[in-house]
Structures are given as C-alpha cells and as structure tokens.
Length: 212
Length: 184
Image (cartoon, rainbow over all chains, first blue to last red):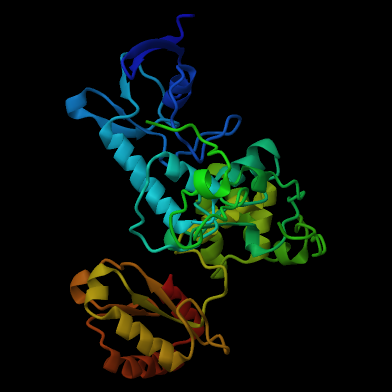
C-alpha cells in the first residue's frame, strides 16, 4: 500500500488501510460484521443510528464512538464486540423497536442481537430519523426535495412548507432506502411489542447476519 | 409518497414586485450571496420584516443556489425564527426548567385561556401573539413572562389578567414606531 496509509488493530488483528477510511469500512473489509441502519455505501456517513458503535483506545480508557463517522488512526485499537458495546446495541435496538415496532428490518436486527425484553412503551412511529432518505434524495438523486425540519421532539423529515415539492421526481429512492417503511413486520403482535418471530411464525429467514 | 396531484408551483424568481419592494434582495447582497451567511441573512430578514415570509426563503434559496429544504430546515430548527407574522403585542412565556418548576405551565394556560389562542398562535385580529421560549436568562425571577420585550418576574396565573390589561393600556399610549424600536 502507498505511504498514504495507517495501521490499526481491529479485534486483535492488525490491518493497514488507506487514510480516510472509516472504522466501519475497515472492519467490514476485515470481515467483521457491524450492524448499521443509517449507513449505506454511496451515501455520506451520518452517525444517526449509533448501532455501529465500537470501543476505541486502551481497554482501561476505552471510548465508545460511532464507527461509520470515525476515521482510522495510526495505532488505534478497536474492539467491536465487547460486552459494553453489545449491551449498548441491545438497548438502542430495544428503543428503536419500541418506537417503530412495525419495521421488519428493525425487528429482525433486534432478534438477531438477542433483544428479549421490551421495557418501553410502543409508539408506532414510522421514522427513526436516520436520514437515509434525505441523503439519498440529495446525494444520489440530486433533488434535495426532503430534509429534516424542526428540532427535538418536533424533528421530522418533510418537504419545504409541508407540501408537494417541485424538486421531487417521485423516484421512490427515499422509500427504497427506508429501514422502517420498506419491509413491514406483520409477526405476532408486532405492532405492540417485540416480534422476533420470523424463524417460527413467518418462516422467513432473518435477513441479517446473526451475531454471537 | 404522495400522488402528483398538486399543480407545480413556480419558484419565485428575482423580479416579482413582492421581492423588489422588500429588503430581501438588499440583505442577500449585503452578505455577498454567501451560503455561510445563511443564518445571518435569515436573522436580518426577520429583523426587517418581523418574520420570514415564504417568498423571502424561496428567494434566498434561489440566489444561493441551495435547495429550499435547507433554508426551511434552518428556519424551523431555531426557535427564534418565525414563519408566520407575529402579533402586534407579543407575549412570551418562559418555560425553561426554573420557570417550569415554579409553575410556568399554569401561567401559560392562563394566557391561552384569556387570549383564546394556543402557544405559537396569533389572535384573529393580529393584536396578540403568544409563544414560549426555553430560557430568557433570568431564572431567579421565574416564572418570567415577556410582554413586548418587557421582563415581568414572578408571574402567577392570577396576575395574568392584570398584565394583559396593562399591556393593552401601554400599547394605546405608545405610538407604533416607538414600540417597534423598543422591541428591537
């Protein structure tokens, strides 16, 4: 590799990557599976879903960062599946399942990560504000018809002035990338609670790699 | 996705009479048509016009060659920006933490009841507007209410009618120009 590279350690294995590679890309190159919802190749990284969290630095001073937005650094130690990280992901997925229980993508991820309890009130939202559709529209479709508006609890994805946008070409790209509206979960009591019933009830394969 | 039933509306371009008679063009020029100055531009437009009219936001987006979504996103993100014209007299109830624990919610309800509008709205005659903010930096005096920019400390629900009466009286005395100066 050229001089424009850095060497780092991911889960104990040393690897050399080009400068500017994100931790997520490096880990995936090494065949390490890190779950994501808001990341997609060809779109900029946004760091919204936080599922790609990894631990960096020496174990006694470890920091949790989102690997999709963190660039590889020389000599960095990265751990992708420590108990702390696994627990953080489980909690995130539990929260996401309770806000959007009808999303098959999220229900499957939760099942794959061993989320077995549901301590939060289900809300039946249809958006996790991952911003994939916004970036799809802006970066791939060159339209910029939708964006975030509002702040805090009022934050939502919308067209300007909440009406049909002239920039929208009805390409459907936003729906294609959406982790909530693309695949609906219709499993047992999916609208109220954890489903995780794919293997038993739906007889459909879980579409994410099972993580130990 | 919604069906394409609504007629496609043209984006307001540079020379509509609405824009020529407004300070929007001048403000954009003052900021050298620079995208980094977007927030400053919107602030200036709001200071000049009292709120951010839709045509102004569209004009800014067109001149800076950025999607209108970006301007709309910023205008809705910051509490300071108004998308609707304010009332002639603006009542601002602080609902920050300190005011909240001292009963700002009750004060706000009382204002809503007396004015007959919800927070964020303006009365039908455009006379009174009601809004909430999250801190005005005078927590020791909470609950705080700003009436046309005047700080009123330790407001209780029972003081609201008096405050509104006083606001009405002082508004009748002051000429309009002096009031907008005081607000600025």
